[in-house]
Image (cartoon, rainbow, N blue to C red; front, top):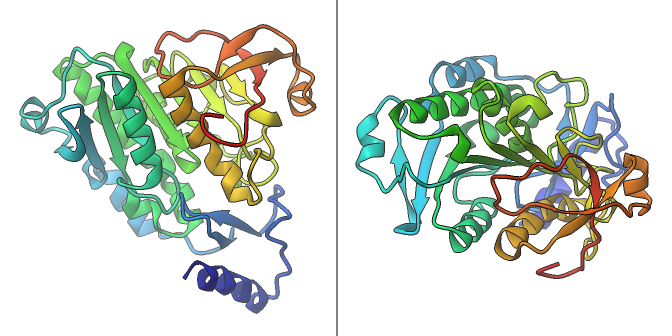
Length: 329
């Protein structure tokens, strides 16, 4: 089935009289480019001028409950409890513990609440610590065309931020919150943090999406939380290239990851590195003088941890760590 789908995008490109090499990468201004669904390892042809479903975007923006907020804890690690904004009983009658750290997870394009990204990170965080995990399921928008999904990311992020602000009125604390987003979700969590006026303790953006974001003021930024960390793993093709946060990590230079032969694999490695670092707290990166030094492996500054679940991180700058090919990297 995967081969059929990949073949179909090639046919679509030919039908549009487009000659586009799937390995060529995205360049600012390209009308056509390839982008993978979250975890499906299939490159889908995207037309940056494809129609945007404005009516659907307005419906998403009107109500934060158009998206799902799924709670997992050590008492219910495999089956979620549904939380609803403006329904206090949905929280008070759940396993949510106001005294504990809360980790929010946001998937990317074509993702959903129970996909591989959410499973791997949920399991890693719950193995590491007794925390609340809230998975944002925004699949109704994420499974629209890429341009529609990209245009709706700010509204979904604001909805998540409104949900967080509401949780705080019930007794939760911004200082015990960690937002983690992948690809389009990497920009989504930035918008959520912005809705809280940067009060969230920590945001981690995992290879935030590059195509159609470089001139977009709604992309994530360092003021979106008290501490913003970005892990770049596919800057040559799918991910955002330039620094965005307080700390920007470029493992293996940020372009192509060891053991990967497809760009979608390198994009996905940000999730793998994060999950491994949460469990093992072992990935330490050298400080770099410049982004160029990070790409050329010319970093010899002090070591700082990449990823993990520590809420009290504070190091800023550009960093590089060289990883292995296989877990735990």
